[in-house]
Length: 301
Image (cartoon, rainbow, N blue to C red; front, side):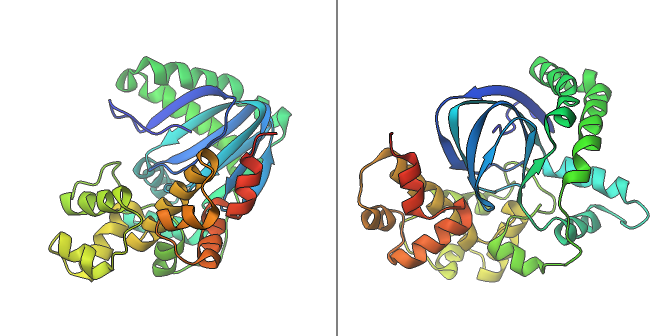
């Protein structure tokens, strides 16, 4: 998967071939990944599932996903700024929504699955290939302002094909519940939060996830109240500091499991989890399989 890079563009498309396992990792963007050739096993909140040509993977921001190519897998990834997505949703439903904040709430209401595999089939997915190839070419060219309308047209054509396959829910999940257990599309989203205090807290959690820190301790580090920190952190990352830390720990544990021979309990303690049952459940929620299953799958044949 790709993440947006400098110079900043709201859409970035790349085609790649992978031969080695990757992740699980999470990005601060919406990712749409079209499988073009080969097969792979994906790990994410939907569990462990195979993908093949004709499949499209849809990932919300801050959603862990890993892949295990079966030989090789070639894919095109389209990474989108969440603000760009929300702006289009706001205009799509202009009769219902007044502004981007309304669009944010509407997205949380109907898109409750942050990781989806859309089974388009090879014939229908084949319609996307010329548009994806041109989108990649324009994206690599880097002339976004010049090519803006053509890029928009290509993206709309792609969306028109895949949108009917995206699963939506009429059941509303509360904002507080989603902030604790699932990624959201944050309000006023930017790829690097402008607030230095939020950046500092995220850096503390990334640099030492094994340390036990309470919300009050984190808030004291940046001279905010715990409620203020929770609010601004959710606005920046779509999840609370604790949920963000859990994601980092799951990502770090996966790295230990695939790159070292550390005993399971030792690896868990190194990322800050001291209860094996608790660590197993959290890892399964974020990666899709248990740590033991993940290590067996990554073991050499």
